[in-house]
Length: 190
Image (tube, rainbow, N blue to C red; front, side):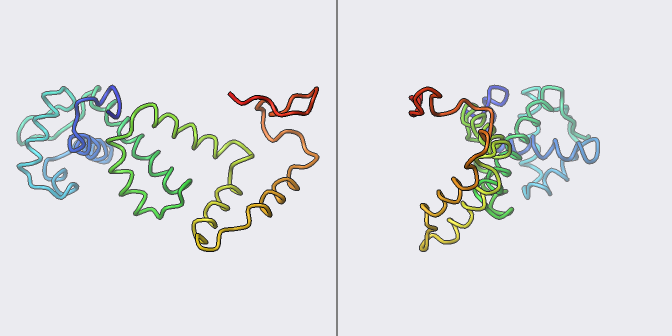
């Protein structure tokens, strides 16, 4: 399951909720025709989905009128949209996929990723952005590695460059040092 707030919603209903969220943000309300156009589905399919979302208390809906999100629906739609955007960012930033591939994969995975895996992914992205040991150099090296799969870069040369870069400097971040000050030997990793 993807999240407690969206438990019981199918991937299809999550997609409808996400589209309604974006349409409402752009136009203050969503129309069934616009939802059908956006999702490339028949209006009859939209009607069935809108009824299912209304029964769950996620939207305000009556036939032939505009559709709006309830407070609960807005909360759930924001969670779905957040998952989508963060997955897309992960695919473009960390995995170096082009935006179209990132979008397509985010659309599929946003419905299946569990809350623990998602939060760990968020932490990983934050780590990539904030920890000096990761960051841009690391991502560029990964990108080069992906492009040169038959001609993988010389890892030893990379290690030497990294050591040269940090030699003689204070620790790169505020994490505990991996070596004990007394002996200089590595600490046990938990």
